[in-house]
Length: 154
Image 1 (spheres, one colour):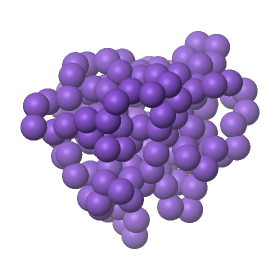
Image 2 (cartoon, one colour):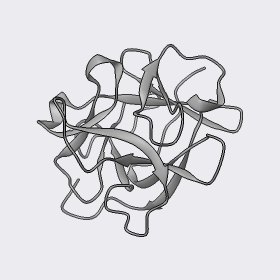
Image 3 (cartoon, one colour):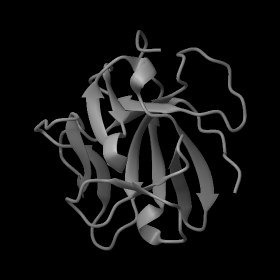
C-alpha cells in the first residue's frame, strides 16, 4: 500500500481491539526510554490520550507520502520514540522523535514507522509493539480528528 496524507492536527488514536473503545495512551510512569505507550479505555481527562500529528519540521508543506511525528497534545515536547521496537513517549529533541506514515487498510489505517514496522496493540494495557506488517486487526487504527494544532505549537 502507499502512504496517505493526514491533516496535521490534534487526534485521538483508536486501536482496533476487542471490547470497549481503546485509545493510544501515555502511561503515568517512566522507565529507561520514557513512558510506555499502551492502549486504554477512554479517560475523562484527555491529557494523555490526545496526540498532535504534524510534519517533522513544523510548518512544512504537505507532500503525499511524507512522514509525520506524533507528540502528546498537552505536552508539546513529549514525542513518540521507538527503542527496542516498543513505543514510548519521551521529552527529547524533535529530531529524535520517530517518524510515521499512514497506509489505508480495510476498516482503518496502519501506522508504519520509518523502519517499515507497524504499530500493534496486542490487548488493552499492553505496551504498543512495532512488528512486520501483517493483515491483523491489532495493527489497524482509526484517527479521530479533534481539532487543529493549538497556536504556538506549530
